[in-house]
Length: 249
Image (tube, rainbow, N blue to C red; front, top):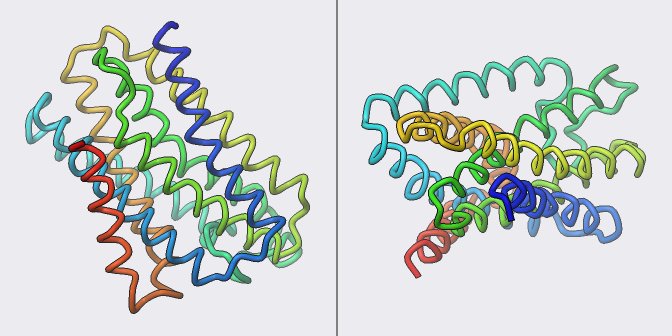
């Protein structure tokens, strides 16, 4: 199988966790504490993966300064886009209760939430595609981290959408669309970077890692902390150690 096609398949699989989470939220009333707990766990998983598998690899391949600048640049770009979308109604797109505005409360918020969800998923997908370029297959810790974190993301956000009157067509249109876009992003990433110098791949990896870290801090940790603040740190630590163990097995 061509690398670009394999990358697309892995990206679609990881993005599919968002759809699974949305399906659970739509048909099952999941206690918010459970959603927040899984979100805290998923935050720890992602932080571990980007620390040991993305930033570390980027620094080893491309050097310290390019890695630092790339990660900082990725975080700046993500935060700037997130601020823009937050002002248009997407600030609470991963919240499971009434924080998300309805279309009546803020016109255009539905589109902003959808674009925000896409913004959150693209860096992860690009990383998956890039992880295949070394010839060793997909990065299992990164794949596991993205899948595990996407499940509560889809669950929490879809629950909030449902509470604020979004239709099933809108909710599943968003998450199926994001899953497909994740596959395409992974595919395009591997196609564009195949044969690129190691330093270039390292820089792109660092940029994506910076964006992912900013996303975790801006959108996942607040939802996790709000309901499980007494245990959020412990759950995040368990997630961190779980991803670390997966990478060392």
